[in-house]
Length: 257
Image 1 (cartoon, rainbow, N blue to C red):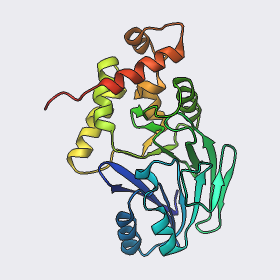
Image 2 (cartoon, one colour; image 1 turned 90 degrees about the horizontal axis):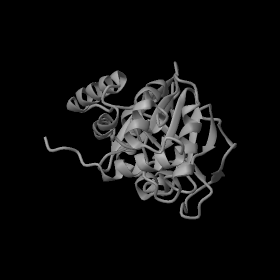
Image 3 (cartoon, rainbow, N blue to C red; image 1 turned 60 degrees about the horizontal axis):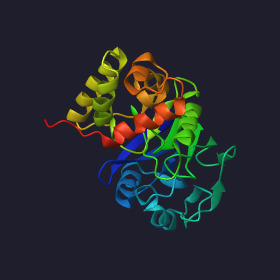
């Protein structure tokens, strides 16, 4: 990461578009749902957009892809999904994205659950995981099953602990509030909640965050922890316990300020 600049560009209501640039001014973006934030960053930092990586087909992650590619000539890497019309290179599990400029390499991981064709990109100590893994949370199950999402999250959790999680949305404060209803004695979670609240009060992003920190405080990566088993039940069925956890999160509402 010494010669790379990573930026989380706020977009739409609560999305992040990830921008990664090298020292020579070549850059890629991940999940550009909106063109203007990317265009402003490219102009401000005098960067050349060379590649676009897409994790899944939802419009808030792909909406500006064709516009940016047409304006810059950037090559589009996208999962095998006909719902993503703009693509130069289709990628799937086990593939490698090898870019010449910027000179970067990413392993492609299939992580179904949020959508059936969702992928993540891992390389250079970074994990671009779209809407599969959030800080202290995970994505809703729009197309996949609890078993698929649990397997996907455990696959990501097995990556090195110093990997930086670069997710697609700013949900950390609400995710912490939910997690603390189930895991109130978790000191790492309490610290993360305080940190996230302070960052948001200053208008700053709560991500990226290390995977080690997520393993310590994210309930969706901790379903075997005694506190989670006690709160959720299904002691002998991990998938049922995960499904119960996801349902509780779906039903959760932030308390009034």
